[in-house]
Length: 420
Image (cartoon, rainbow, N blue to C red):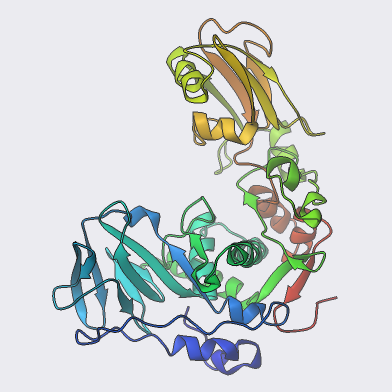
């Protein structure tokens, strides 16, 4: 992310400058791989240094046979030759690309460097190395609609995305012999990331770009902490009326995370009671029918037979959200987390686990298909993006939105004293 004039010299962000100066599109004669950024000696005041540059894997390019990359040296065609990567002028086990202006992969701008290496299963693998704030801009642009987003909504989303990145990377670093290789997935497995948001000539597009950049700049370095540790702050599109407890949906050995409870969402509650057909977000309530073939595939995938005979409710949270479900097949039964059921049936079809009715009912025989009706979209943990938009429209600032979405957390500025 290119900073406003004078900002790079500010004390708060001076730690970024050396890393921003590292980028230079590698000349064809340069055969040496780039080194990793310097490691922070310990956590605590060095969190900002740890996240000065993040690694982001782009799964959409996995196993590609060729890629077109544009940087200062021109347009390059990247391919694999055995265990080496070639750009037409040089070959190496891995090749870096990018510079101060970033790098374009198939036309998409990434404001950092790209490392291309062989994918273990064939073809190519792309990993970006991005300044954290450039990554956050790309995440916010991918995760919410910029066109109608409120400033406070954008700021809250930026802080949540930065918190998720820091908390997740710190967990992954502890499991690696080389912590600097800890990587985020540029997909919904972690956070959606599709590159830099580049406005076109449309005035609305340019306005959205300015509001995005302003929100990320205003919150630069701000991260949510829970009981002294960075919180890997999850969020979802719409909670359906009540957010979910983190530990009940994503079991965690971290005691602080086990205490992060859900909260009522006034915005979703209002929408559920008064469906407005003119709301550009569409209906909060959804309905889906899974065919007999869908259910046979489900039973087979879970190893409980060739057909699903019935389902029984497992655990539910105080708001009624499904936490687990017992599936009974003709050759056995299995209790699985409700979010795993979404993964099996498709997140796009089973939009959430806040299910309010079903036919046949729980415990009744399933002779044909299974119809489910529910509210919201996503796992429901943490920030409800639609609820945040409603709150911002009511005048809530980002701090108040985050205090509601993540009760018990505190907002800190990396490298600076904790905020009151």
